[in-house]
Length: 315
Length: 246
Ligand SMILES: Cc1cc2nc3c(=O)[nH]c(=O)nc-3n(C[C@H](O)[C@H](O)[C@H](O)COP(=O)(O)OP(=O)(O)OC[C@H]3O[C@@H](n4cnc5c(N)ncnc54)[C@H](O)[C@@H]3O)c2cc1C
Ligand SMILES: Nc1ncnc2c1ncn2[C@@H]1O[C@H](COP(=O)(O)O)[C@@H](O)[C@H]1O
Image (cartoon, rainbow over all chains, first blue to last red; front, side, top):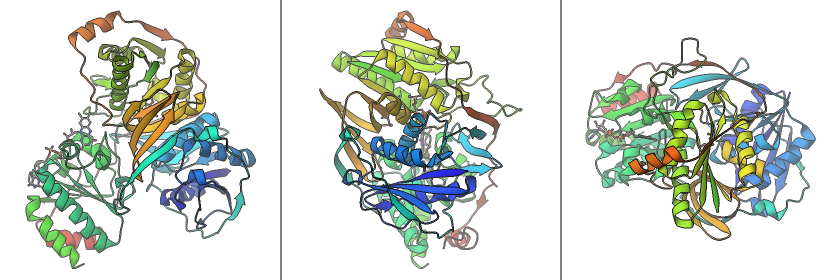
């Protein structure tokens, strides 16, 4: 069975999540072909024998209407059973387009694949579903971080896709980007997430201590660390909504999730309960967060964070 | 200007959701249902357009008889009329089936603007805005947090991996709403009274079928329980020896 995997790039850089999608593709298909789209794309892809490539100055930043067209072209040649792409924010948008384009069923944002069935959290991970999906063509988008890139070091032969994309596909125009700093890693892409809640007490405290712990952990571990927040912290205006974790924020499953001054309301848990390890720091021993945490310190953060940050510097 | 908004009935965010003993469904008795929170932003946006631009507004859902409750609420918030595409077990549908229904209704209604939520909080699909834009050949702006409606296009902001993006997107357009777009208003008593008399049409559509089945629902895997630590040194030790990130 064949899989066609879309490889997402921004400013020429390949997304780690797309490599994970290739890793997943090897679990379900015996032949994996990639399609890479962007501008000035790095040639660093591994784990596939063939990669279609389409480069276009207009696609330095991915756009779903023209990219759907490019994938259609590759799929016309490959007739793959599985069309696979990572469920990044862009991948989610594009996946819907591909389902319509190929008149195919879609499974989006799943986290597991066992014995021919897919696993996905429903109802904010309050329930887990086992799902069967099949068809001539099936669109699948694994959640970032849920699967590992393949160890296979095969370097692909790049096959240019010689097509002309109509201007009408570029009707949506990006007129401005206020870029965030590259250190401002998205919570969904991080290995470690440090989140603060109302218990941080003030904007000053939140903005000083949460990033400080984030930076100390990044230095000490060499991993990708991001900072998150409860909705209470977002609503108080201490931090931007893009950092909110939970039912109306982002869903994260990092290696380690730190919840600091967060009570652990059901809507917050919805966004982080699939983290591999949860560490909670809260002064209230009855806080619901301790019900799902792996490690807890019952204390005021003021008595923990400064010492923790200092000691991490020694690691 | 005509605006079509799509909503779904979902369990309340605070609800305790449990699988039934046979694992085929969730226990629905006694569960409170709401308009999917992101769809509420979409509804409010449509109501705002009705007020600011005199837009004609229509709400549609693929749902069971009980979903009328959510349609009425959207009408009470100010939407002009409602369409129910009936499906008794709509929560088992694949997004491509729901997308088909949405596209069918949109072809009949020919809106300039389609408003949706970015995702539903029951099955977390995310796929429908892209599906609908592709099926209809409409332009698309996902995850919108701020919108300005011009004569020929919509100017919209969203947050992405890159940062804050501003887009200029011509009509006809599919927009998916992110939290922050607006503040949904609780319906007034007047609104609720009026909603009772607003038109609500039921449409039967034959949906395409796919090989898609929710085989089993199970409770989340249990977590192993909390180990309380007494000091920062103990935490450092755990991070080193058990979590192994140091
Ligand atoms: C429709 C809907 C959607 C929602 N979506 C989300 C969502 O996506 N994400 C989300 O997070 N919430 C969401 N919520 C809100 C949620 O119900 C909670 O209100 C929110 O998560 C509470 O945030 P918090 O834990 O920071 O604050 P609180 O619940 O007030 O908890 C603060 C905690 O800090 C502790 N504390 C206080 N001082 C200290 C100190 N000095 N040191 C250590 N600990 C201290 C307290 O003991 C307490 O446990 C949603 C709610 C609704 C209705
Ligand atoms: N059953 C439904 N009926 C009408 N609209 C729906 C339905 N399900 C989802 N939608 C719309 O599609 C959006 C995205 O949903 P989803 O892709 O299922 O997460 C929702 O926010 C709604 O606007």
